[in-house]
Image (tube, rainbow, N blue to C red; front, side, top):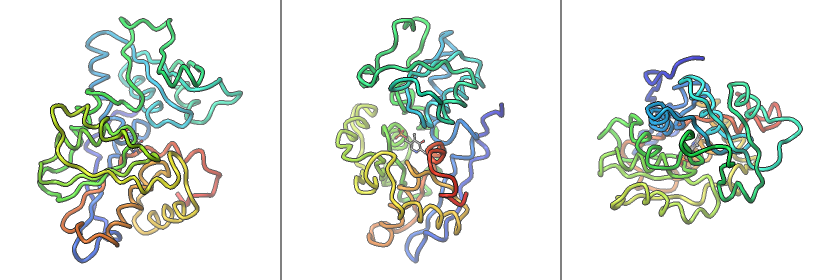
Length: 290
Ligand SMILES: *Cc1c(COP(=O)(O)O)cnc(C)c1O
């Protein structure tokens, strides 16, 4: 498997989204690795390092199209770490492409009931001494610290915009970016009102101010509309930037909408392309032009 290549990350201007007062750039974290894509590498790096140092295996959680699950499987393969994935619900008769790939890279898949999954129960066969538990989405201090190594060119940007799921990446950005940079997260979940507490918990003692937009989820996590799909194709057509309908498409859509409406977005604005195109594999063939 290919190595991680952080030097492949590029910072590119996006004239199609820029206007007279705002210059938009995109940080292409999706380029670090084809499978350990985008923010997942940054969030996993210190979990991997810790597991290796302590001689532990890794166990984590995810759904059938989880970027995090696939990234963990690939990263553990690359680092020679034994790994297991806990999946919600009964084992399906045929695996999703993402689960197939994770299994083919050696991840041991364990299906547990929805109730057990909600409580994040690790089956008793995985002893805590031997298995490092990586919370779903890499949420946790290690995940935040890893995300703080995302190369955001300190001082170059007035605004940073990113997608949020668990908020781990955003917490890392809040940790690493200068206080003068305004950070806005675009929530991929509907009514994720606990998100600020979850972010603040990673940033003791107190997080600096930031903004979360709760109005660009398009119906909720992994939901989409024809308008969002149209936008993804349009964005790709004009800029060559591929996005996924779960996270980054909603982010770019939100950035465009705000730039059209809100004059406070002037200056230099950085959009974090956090990678992760797994969700698109669940779309009917031909939906996207990329
Ligand atoms: C997982 C993921 C996110 C969410 O990151 P959090 O740290 O959980 O907020 C954002 N974008 C993409 C592409 C992802 O795969």
